Amino acid sequence: MIFMRRDGYTDSATSEEILMMGLHSRLPKFDMEITDIPFTMSEFTKLSSFYKENVGKELKEKDLAAIGFFDENHCLRKGALLFKDDYNGESTKIVCSSYRGMTRGDNEILASNTFQGNLIDSYSFMMEFVQQRMNHSIIKEDTKHIDYDAYPKRSLLEAFINALAHRDYLIDGTAIYVDLFKNRLSITSPGNLYSTGDIERTYQLDSFISKRRNELISSVFVLCDAMEAKGTGFEKIMDDYKVAPLNQKPYVYSKNKQFTIVLPDLTFKEGVQTAEDSLKLVSSIEKPSKHDLSILAFCYAIPRSIKQITDYLNVSNSSFFRKNIISNLVEQKFLIELDSSNGKCYQTNSELVSRL
Image 1: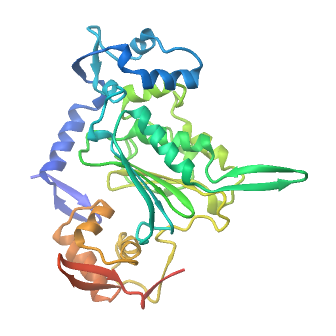
Image 2: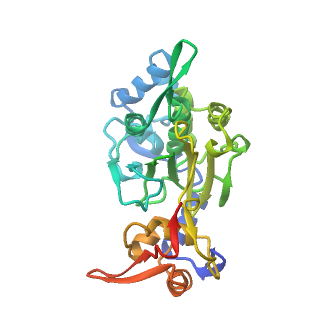
Image 3: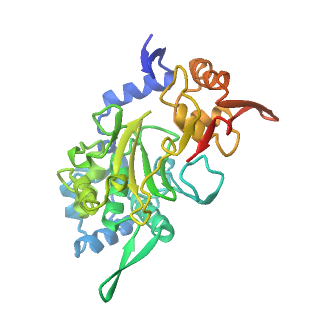
């Protein structure tokens, strides 16, 4: 039997987790595998246009051959398939949402759109969704007015391309989540930062040298001048935010097989206030877990089922989770257990927990 460490306890690995460990050990570079689909230049018009827009010249077949886009028999690699004009597989699913408040738990979703398609259209979908909805300000300096965007375009490009290039495409049933809150933009991609485990929140983005999970996909974005060859794109984000105060600095973290980068809204003067930051408890939680504040924020506005909670946290719906985390919050009355037509659900007790 194979065991895994989860939140301070040991549990047996599921069949899916064992399969994933085997896949990762055998296929360290998923996107370099050869398919039996022949390369045809006319099927990559979106990629060609993206290349011309960024580089300023026509994309040639020899450019793609130089990075191993196809093999000596002109058969495409798996990563190349994701750039085909007609690609529509679930492995590129993206969910973009805009919230009125500061957490997913807020019951006011302004917009939520889902997309799956080739990686060029995926990038455009994320960029357009955010740019159409983000805040814009005007700063007056002497006799002129300067337009001021909530998120610098270069930082958006780096963050979106990073999510596409380093996503773990072997994890089925997942998506990139782009969440636009009142005070920040959060981009969460399936898979930890490659070759690392969990990472606590850190503001030192320039200390990361991104190792490539997807060699070919990264090479395509480097070819299109949309990504740094040496993996230092985070430095550009840090440069865009270099004059921002600490509460408006970008940060990253990685947990539960997901990697998240957070870009603060530069027009929001109060700075970033996350779900964990926005709660005030009348007393301390006894035997706390690292999920407690996230659960209380998620369940604050409306009742949630166990499945909704575990899906939100991206954790296993295990007996340990129910007995030691949910039950602990219920017993201390931080969570109220309710009966509904679909079974039990849970809502945060507003008498013990308030929003700042």
